[in-house]
Amino acid sequence: MDRRLIVIGGQAAGLSAAARAKRVDPRLEVIVFEKSSRIAFAPCGLPYWLEGEVPGVDKLSRYTPEEFERERRVRVCTGVAVVAIQHSRRQVVLSTGERVGYDALVIATGARARKDLPGAEQPHVFTLQTLEGAEALSRFVKDRKPERATVIGAGYLGLELVEVLLRWGLKVRLFEATGGFLGRSEPGMVQWVREYLERLGVEVHLNEPVREIGARQVNGYPSDLVVLATGFQPNVALAEEAGVRLGRTGAIQVNEHMETNLPGVFAAGDCVEVRHIITGTPVYLPLGTTANKTGRVAGACAAGRRERFEGVAGTAIVRVGSLAIAATGVSNLEARAAGFDPVTVEIQARDKPDYMGSRPLYVSLTGARSSGRLLGGVIVGEFGVAGRINVLATALQARMTVDELYQVDLAYAPPFAPVWDPLLVAARELAKQL
Image (tube, rainbow, N blue to C red):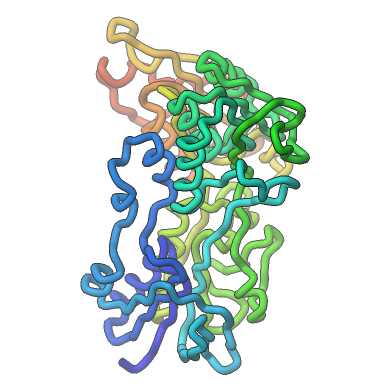
């Protein structure tokens, strides 16, 4: 071993960085410090564990520390926090008081759930980012037997929690400060999702921000239980104290090689901002897919190889009941703010031929008037949503025009899709408008 890489954080980004660095340079000594007792934990699976779809919480951890060390030849230290980075000395200070030197450093400190509303620290208010938070929520419901629950935030986590609470038999009220779901406000999509939630028994309050959480009420409505799902904040205090520059989103600023402003210091995962491939501007979109990809690039570059992370399209999908809601790219409002002259179409179609028992499908597409470039889309339906949103995400990555999307040779067979796939129908309508 002639060089040492230290990775701060033993979850998705940190472990991806550690494993990739060791593959690039087998002679590199790689040490991971993780402050908790678990590594490779998948918090995205917590709602499904609470629902009972995941049989045991251990299923949410891909590796034990011992397994990762054995398979990846990386040293993993759990229960040890890095409390300071002294970059001038090329060393980190541990919670044990020990100082450990490094040649290269990857910061993968993740994010934490926002709890910045007055009243958020009350015992009946929960977030769902950690196993401890999920367990506390489950215990509260079993012990206190609440009847009325409030979810604040209609992003993917908030919508997942709505389903959890409904399955537990609670009456659910959903508040969202904006006028839509998943950060999108296309009128047809909003109407479709809202009506579906209301059929499930959810009381939906859009364009109604919550200013304060009371002891037994939220915005004047009675509530026994509150779940905060208003987004995440990057854990950047450690990096900022060391002189690492933050970007305009408040997350760590990195270039395409995941390099910070400090030489030899890289960052990845939910603590960094990344480039949006449509607008070209920095965005903060903490997702597991991005964490793994940025971690791989950071690890490779820390080990001496020059790899690049191109950016994100902001692709997301969530399930509520039998309905899937998915989005990628930018909305009409976001496109206009980025300097495009956007056009948006919304259609309703069928996901397969009627004689095969079709279901309705909503598709929205946005394109640029001047160039014809595809800018984003939303899909809502019961079947075939994931595959179709991934087609749109691929088209965005390839910088396809709407006409080029219309020419894509999509698969057809009666059990799966109609002759004219809803994506092609929407592309044809958008091409007419453009």
